[in-house]
Image 1 (cartoon, rainbow, N blue to C red):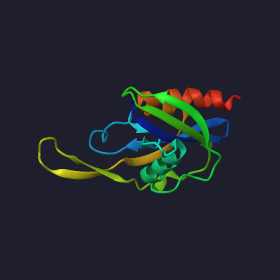
Image 2: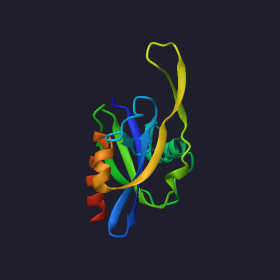
Image 3: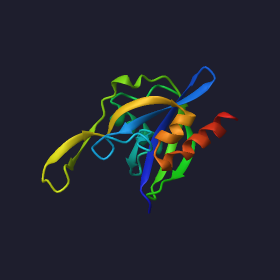
Image 4: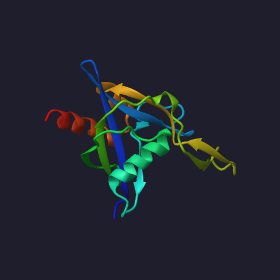
Length: 154
């Protein structure tokens, strides 16, 4: 059974441009990377927690504040390269990414040093037009942008 993951894809309109919110993954493995190093706020969940509840929880954990009040709509389920099933909810909403305060994780760093260090899950966040987001998002999440365009065209 594949792992279940859920996340939120916020979007806004900036004039004629569409922008999406993404966070830069924290920790030393991502520190010097920009391309394919950004993600929507998302994370694992187990049933009976609903995918939407999990997505909203993960937003709060990874950005340090509750997800904006909005009408969240199921965008779809996307199989990730790892095999995880990512359920994504989308909403048009305002959010100021300048003051995110992510939860943290621990890992041994440097490798084989025996030193455990703590790092934020997300160390930055920002709004990106779709062309830029297609470069910044991790490869497995890029199909979300196509699905968002289809969703908004209806």
